[in-house]
Length: 131
Image (cartoon, rainbow, N blue to C red; front, side, top):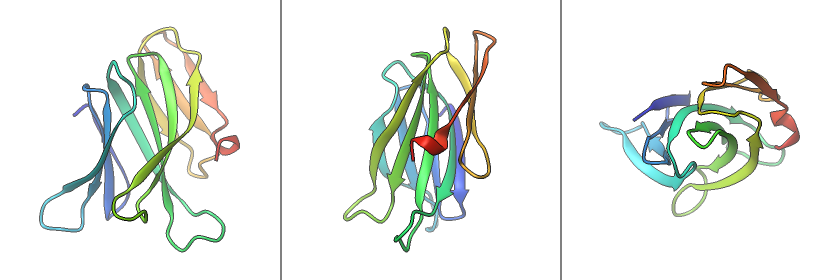
């Protein structure tokens, strides 16, 4: 596991060097992986998440940002209310780094996404336009 982020007491998401992001249910005695997907084939270095309430929905979705060894920053929507298990949807794949992305962060209002990497660059993306 390369990183972990939690946007609620009930759920977390982890980043892994195997290229996968994993959603976890934290409500039981032990964490339980509920969903896994390939995010960056060469490895995921970092992850950030936030709860996002969409109009007309009772349950919030999870907004997940990931950064990888492929120099990309990805923005995902994870829907935990999907039956029978959570689903993910790629909202945006942002290119601009010239080396591995090492850190991502979502602003509290989820409108901006910041990333930094081994290239020494700090980039800010308009996440709100992708949602």
